[in-house]
Image (cartoon, rainbow, N blue to C red; front, side):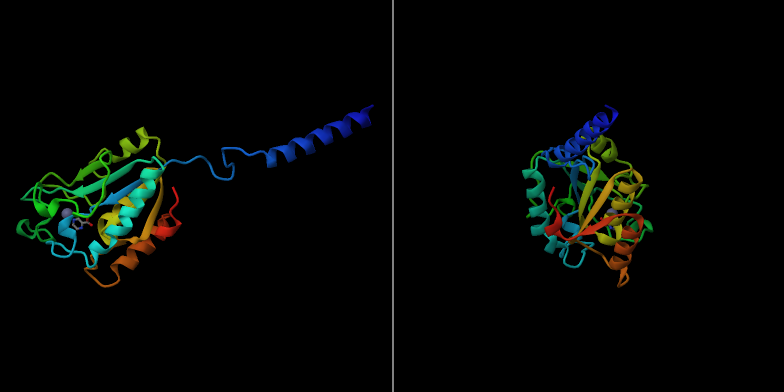
Length: 221
Ligand code: VGL
Ligand code: ZN
């Protein structure tokens, strides 16, 4: 009797295990459920060729970023676009003793998104560094980006935009600090390169901190 019971339990265990492995389940148990959002960083005229703080080839990423926007839109996932949004007397400007030429001054053409960038109407725009006395490279700094992502149930952000060695890096590192998974799309970013090699250094730093670096083709939200 005991033997029969043991064999029965064994059979049930094996069968239920097989059924479990084979049953199509909407939840992939190897990967916890995750909701992603796209964060487009500072893809503004002043950071593109012809702008006052031009990133070399900054405009080259626009078609790739538009494709990423398409992928996230298709998947019904949220899209955020940060913008540098400085007052005319911003502390980061050389005119005020700062390191940069005046750029992305509120309500000027230079602060507008690149004209070919196709942001959907429901994208959320995050303005940063908008007070005279404070600079902010990260899209999280002094904004409600973290709260909005949490509200939307997002636990992983995919980052593209400008510039690799400043705002992309700062946003990615702050994303990790906020407890999010962070992916940076290498062929959808460009760097200022004040010193040659700054972009590569930024990529190394991000990767060491836990940022996932991928090519555009590998992004399947
Ligand atoms: C940025 C320099 C100054 C950026 C913003 O968006 O990366 N860089 N302000
Ligand atoms: Zn700035």
